[in-house]
Length: 209
Image (cartoon, rainbow, N blue to C red; front, side, top):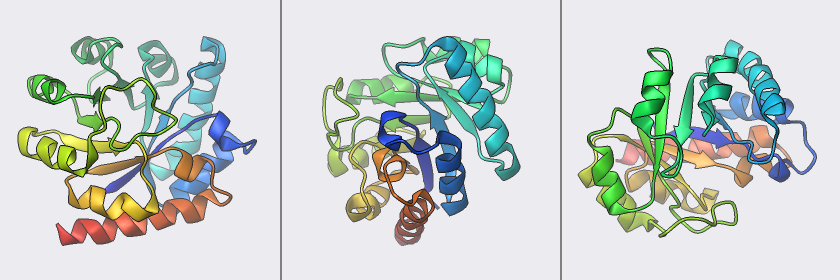
């Protein structure tokens, strides 16, 4: 079954409370949460990470920290997601305790091939479709790109960028193991129902593969 992977964005919450939104989404079917804080101070980032870790613990849903290994260590988060310009994943792996999750964004075919020799738990195809939340990327993978990654990588594939209920099934069928959703859940009036819709679509498409 394909997993729904929530990536938080403070601005896209549109004034909603972070913890309440995340908890509602998890109750709706989200199976992994990444805390992304591009503008926050380190202190606020750590405080939010600790609070979110406590919020997710009863649901046994992993908390992934975007970019910041120090924040992940301080909050005892379950893992770290890095991009191509962040700390190398092999270095992240050395710094984190055993058993933690390491994810890596891939933005080109060569990066997918390079990741084959890396000890990462998943690669994130970024972006599948162009999106206002990802403006610094080289290409748009599209469905054909996802199929290419599936053929050339042994890693789990997280699809991120422009994922909507109308294209989620095709993205899963193309090979995505997880659907990373940002605005589709963060900006939803009802994050529980939004997450439940994505999960229902992903599960049905996963059974067709």
